[in-house]
Amino acid sequence: MAAFTRTYAGAKLDRIITDEGRAHVYVFKRGDHHIVAVFAPSEPVMITLRSEAREGHIMDAMGNLTKLDDSTQIQIEATPYPKTVILQGARDVR
Image (cartoon, rainbow, N blue to C red; front, side):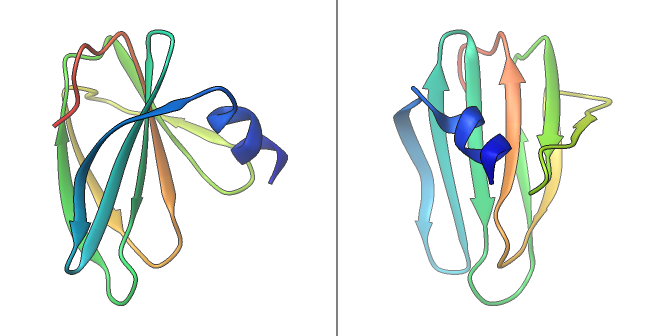
């Protein structure tokens, strides 16, 4: 929980990609980082995110980071448990 709180501390909601139906995707901004919260309330859904980020990571609930091979097009499975995508240097996330 501490890693989750640290990651989102000081971040401001930038935009909502989707907030209806089967998936929810919220984009927060802090400095040159975009922090994306992804979850699906009932059943898993595959989500594709696109950005121009220099680097990206997926953070699990324990704060462990997994580096993304490609931070410009990210495939992530949204589940009832939220996932966090951290993108560095992106001007936009879609």
